[in-house]
Image 1: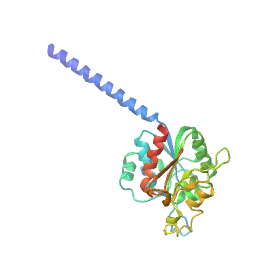
Image 2: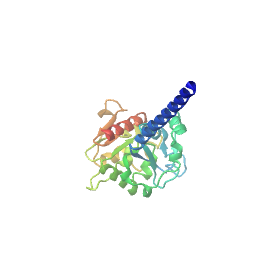
Image 3: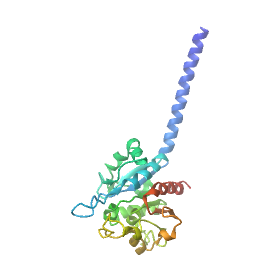
Length: 261
């Protein structure tokens, strides 16, 4: 009888412990879900030229690492593109890109990206645009996407970009009819590097270069000579930008810091 009582007490204790553990885990998960949503804008443009020799698309290494940072900090992430559905990516999945594809649902998201009409800006605390040349072709001139960025920004949201991504948000106009980047320090893929690379035939296949678009719309473009290191992240109010892909994850981390502070 004594032994049976202790067994019953032990079983009840284990049951209570399991219930408490489940409650704690559920509470943590709910807490993460309550942190909000972040929008990533991607391109549907696969090639820059009719002969399909020059790939445009989206650069995996500039999108997957920020996605991982957002997810691992408890934010839900949605992808939106000009036409929705699947979007083209370049670069092989290695390192954190492989991890986020395998374990964090990256492919499911990018293969069913939202259309601009399906996005409610009020749901998002931030918006990010990575590189690859694609965004310069179909995001930079898409009024619906530019309007989404403006609305998120004016709703106290954060805007981030890496590489050619800042060239895509260079044309965002606010309700004041002023460009969002006007008189703000912003960086992105610089002309000095663009003209030395054959990725877009020294930039000749592009509708415009990142640096030219930002300068044209009043941004205080940060060139390599303005930065301590070419991989520095530039933070100006609620706009976060960097020139090159190695710092894409740091852009995401800085965006989260601004959101949470």
